[in-house]
Image 1: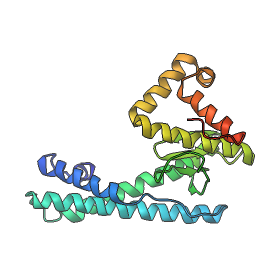
Image 2: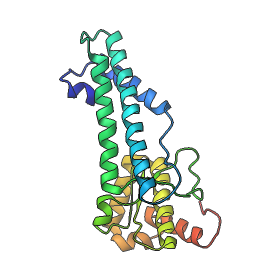
Image 3: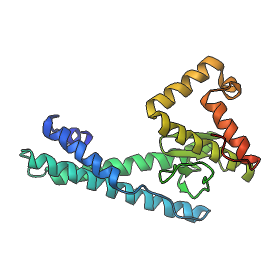
Image 4: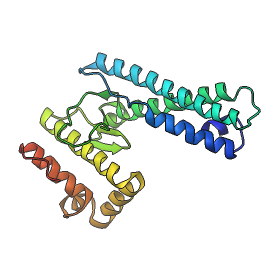
Length: 217
């Protein structure tokens, strides 16, 4: 849909079918996971790998979308190429934004959280570090600042990883709508202390992790 709009195409049955087909192909492609290691060099490698992966995945899903539109009667002879280029640009740009805002992907052991195969991408650095950020879960991104000692950094990573689990359970919109409404209702600190809130559940998980107790939920 975005690719179609980028090249001035109209939104119709063929473009919607193409979007659905591209989405199905994209969901079937394994998710990106960073290489293990630490330090600046590993961060650069992970950034380049993730950018390349995202551009390639975007190109493949875009080409699929274009091909379906072509079959359904789109007369643009360049629809497949244009869709592939648009998909590649979209995937590359999205990852570039994530790296710039939250830093490169990094290896982080969050096996304590029962994610299965769909685990978050942990990040550190970027503009968030310059703004003295602590931690945030944004989509599949779990940001935690490296400006703290290793114990606190691990706890932040576990908390944001659990928020991603909550997000998968509730859905993107419902998770963020609820966590924002709870912050307004109870206050930022109060949301952590009030039983039943998303932040309070996350705090229980972090405490259990720090005390080497079983996962509490």
